[in-house]
Length: 182
Image: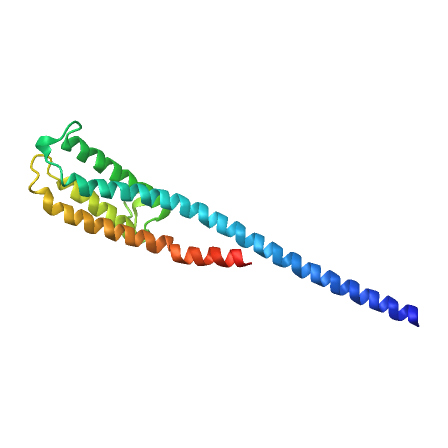
């Protein structure tokens, strides 16, 4: 009888220990899964941040190009700087499509390539607006560019605001804190 009680007690203890370690292993695996998900998400956002930073650099350049007197520009000329800016903005617009494809491509623009069908993401609209402003940047007369400066500033502020909404750094900080607490 004592042997049976001890045997049952040992079996119960073994079962409880097994259950305890199983739960612990499941929690550890769940934590590892969350870490892997966070790492993948961070990789995506790292690439997105790099693109958004490159875009912000070009928007800042555009703001400051408006302050240049074309007659006092050392080479490259304001015309060449404007051309480089437009080229970079065009590239950034297309690179942005890698992160934010057009919406509802089945509805509109069926005669265009897949990447250009549908409605462009609002964040890219800011870069397109900057491209359009850069196109009218006067490379001969500085007076007309002063008004463009404020428009470029507004476009840049809108772009940064929208990029920050996508990146949501406050939520990422909270997520990181929660991971570290575990």
